[in-house]
Image (cartoon, rainbow, N blue to C red; front, side, top):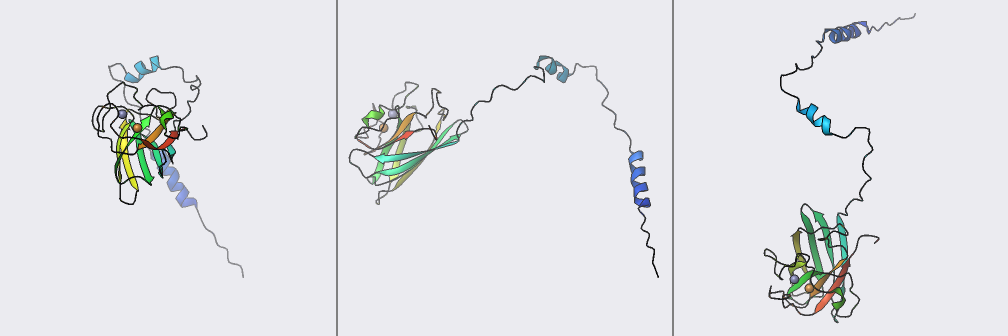
Length: 208
Ligand code: CU
Ligand code: ZN
């Protein structure tokens, strides 16, 4: 014996059709007497069909600098530079440093070749300011001091407002170097009395 099972979809479909047909069409808003801002704007906008400008290479968001020992020191470490809103964040981590505070700066040349790191030149100072500590007028490269513990490890973090990681820009840290000194930067002139250069690392783009 066969059982014929009839499943009907007619009712739901009918309901759906009814719902659609019952929907009131949405009327566009009635025009007002005022000139439309969109119309004014569209008159100065370039034709939509024009191709977009050639893509600009994206700025790197992060550069890791390896710090190498100089002046006979045992210093090692890294500086991680990150592009942030309005500046560059620098996070330094070192080992083998003398306990206490040691000054650190961005210096103007990407050259750590000299045994005393003098090849890196002076403090990066694109705005021709006097030397200083963070929170005051200073060289753009003045990063302050790294706090170093008794075990020789230390860290320091600073956001340098106005600096960039875009190669070729006047305030770019790319193509420069990071120096760690043997003594505290006391903010004095001309370069903070921080003594010899015990660590150095060049700031280069990845693959550059
Ligand atoms: Cu320095
Ligand atoms: Zn300085």
